[in-house]
Figure (cartoon, helix red, strand yellow):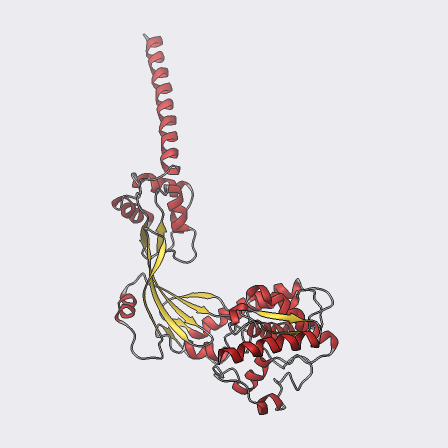
Length: 384
């Protein structure tokens, strides 16, 4: 009898182990395999929530079939306490493993409504846009200039939503004065800030929260630019005619203002590098303009002969070498071009057409350059 009981117990144990193993394999497949979501959704993870509430929300939206399994999987991966508040795009067919990764990895939200404060060279705009989960593309709801009157209703509406995200986008080539002026117009920010050193801010996109301090954001921009400049300087070419990172930043700002064509930057850098090496004055209009405006807005007209002849620290037609400070905030590409210029014999360049997007034509001799200038003058006369 005892032998019969032992045999049955052993059989039960084998079956139990088999079933447990099968259940484990099933659970692993369910957790890692494609989910039931037929269309992408925007999942909001509120501050202070927990993985249990998130899994329940996902189940109600049809993104997962087994909320308990998601909670167990997140716990097994030690991610239960790593939940990050925000709005996240959950793609079609996302597995539970992928969803847990999305809501715990951190970083910027990837879904929902966002407001972008764009600080450009000529103006500033505010853009309100919303992500369509079905297409993964942002749909613009409103765009306006904060200096031109009352904001549209769409802007007021999204400011009332708790999951709206905010970003400040800095264009390459803006001046520090322009940045501070426009930050002062952003009504979701607080605090005062002095104009930082020219060139010290990294053009980029910065996420902010309502109530963000302007000085703190300026500090982030400065820290980013310091890191970019330090990395570029550490990887600079040998034998450059600039001796310090500060001089590299000045040169980068001139490159930034001289060309709107990204692939031209190393060649423009080569022109100024060759001139510095040969002791030729830089003779670049953007530095003269900065001496006239002090970086406070756009000149809005051509330079006068008196301004080109004036003895100022920024008139590179009259001074040798570089001006005393940067003339704008250059982006990473211009900084890298300044310390790793193309190898050319070029000493001159002039606009190829009347459209800045068409770039420049370059020359190694004055005769070549004069021919290029004459061709440009013909285009000017033809357009009048």
